[in-house]
Amino acid sequence: MKLLTLFILVSLSCQIFANPAPKYVKPAFELITLGDTGGIQDGNLSAFLLRSLSDSNYIALDAGSLVNGINVALHKKAFANITINNDPAWQTNGIILREHVKAYLISHGHLDHVAGMLISSPQDSKKPIYALPSVNQTLLDTYFNWQAWANFTNRGKPPQLNQYQLIDLKPKQATPIKNTSLKVTAFSLSHPLESTAFVIEKGQNMFVYFGDTGPDEVEKQGKLNAIWRYLAKQMPDKTLRGLIIEVSFDNQRPDNLLFGHLTPKWLMAELKQFNILLQPNITLAGTKVVISHIKYSLASGQNPRHKIRQELAQANNLGIEFILAKQGQVLTF
Ligand SMILES: [Zn+2]
Ligand SMILES: [Zn+2]
Picture 1: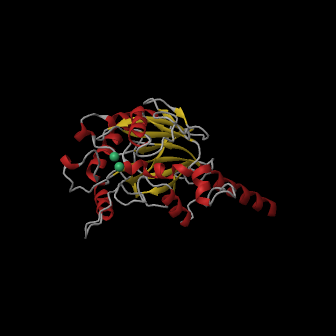
Picture 2: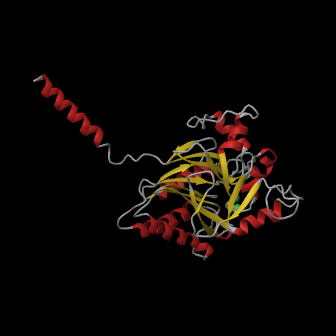
Picture 3: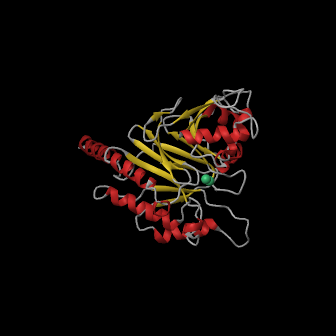
């Protein structure tokens, strides 16, 4: 009798553990926000670290603020989930930057996306920079030209210091990211100068980072639509774990003053287009969308984060989980 009770108990508990709650999916990526604003707050400009959870090394998605972002993240214990290398030659922030950041993915050449990489380059380690050809050319022409800054790359004005290897990404073609288990596929975005969205893949899992972008209806180039179509085509087989996209201004900003940026209204319009392409089998409900690049303001009485959060919540009829990026925050996807 005792044995029978034990058998029933064991088989019951096996069943419970064998059937986890259907909605729980083991995370695949970790994201650390190094910089959450789109200007003008130096020390907190667009930059994120992303890693596969099976790896203890990161790629940097833009690099507006690096060392200050790493310092804030260290203070908030954001690197608690990795084993940080032991290297007596460097402080912990130096070890993170030099040994745990394996590559830069740069969306475009605007200063608020590259300033941290430029400023920290004298003490950085050798690593690749992945970007669309026009973006790499802007880096060479504008910064790594021995005038604005020394040429730390392997191209352009000599002498080339060869610390950063510039790698031109072919649009819509997957490229493995050196020294990581990740792949990247780049898509052009509409902005005053060419910007980029990066689809990062690890196995069947996808994560998308959008650099600065205007809405298709204003820009008239259909570039966001091309990405939504690509993702919709991938999603029967692959899982979209989350995305980072910009909302620079609140809804009061007139369309003629967007300068290639989004507002809550325009982001929702774009996500609705994406959701339509996914129907009838998949929806965006429950998808984590991280909001980046909110413009910081020095003007009195202004809290753009608060307003944008409200406007997104009011318009969110797709069940999306909006998360406002916060410097030093760790998220898993
Ligand atoms: Zn920007
Ligand atoms: Zn920009």
